[in-house]
Length: 342
Image 1: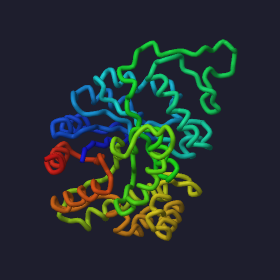
Image 2: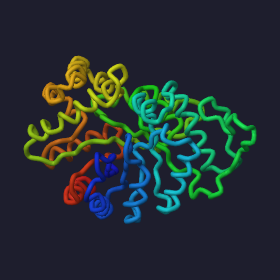
Image 3: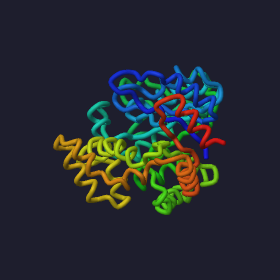
Image 4: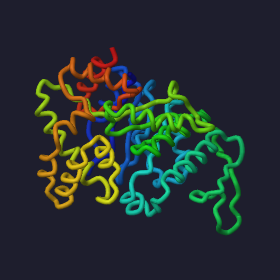
């Protein structure tokens, strides 16, 4: 099992101690460091800043939002980071949801699958640098209609790697299948090993499509997972319930919340409905209180060292190739590295 450190995105202020976390990950044998973005900090700058302290770990976005940048701009970010890191960049992409796409970026949300396919194609054209980049659209036409003076261009800078890996953040069956078809990996959130047969069906759908880029044998499944080393499992589970309530009840519109849909597929339909109702009415503490222990334990790994090792093996057997973990301190990073990388 490969191990990645998930830095996430910033809150109201830049986090403190992140450089120490990244240093510890490099020293402890982690395979990658990832950074995210939502509607505040971006995903690329932290990797360039703190990643400059490293020489070995891969540096990935988990995820860079499609609507934040045009495809060619995103490719510029990725190829720049790849050069600066000596070929260690991983471009993780995701569509986000309508509240962010339309409310923050001012872009239309419909047809996310078609937009993703077109976006990735343009990024790959930039990285290949075989010919001037063009796209018939309809989402990202190049050259765009306007003055009529636009011309197809090739990147001035020669990319370091034409095959820079692109992973897709995906939660639903069609998006996961698309990842298996056109990408090099799947960035999974709230993964449940119990549902591995269902995920395999989605992935196999993509692998079986004509022109699929990868097979299961050389495709990465990177799952973000809270791994908590503790002898007091019930207390740790209780502490994580507000986070689950936030994502299920508040990170998305009530009519379309992809995180809520993930838990509905696990069989928590009634619980999701009640969490959403309470959270949307401002009763956040009550929403957290109705989160069942199983909803936390199913998508996170919490317990003593023996329990954690056993669960990580179970996730690996279910098809996960990289576990993306969070850690509050450098000592916890080293502890997880010692436990999971030996």
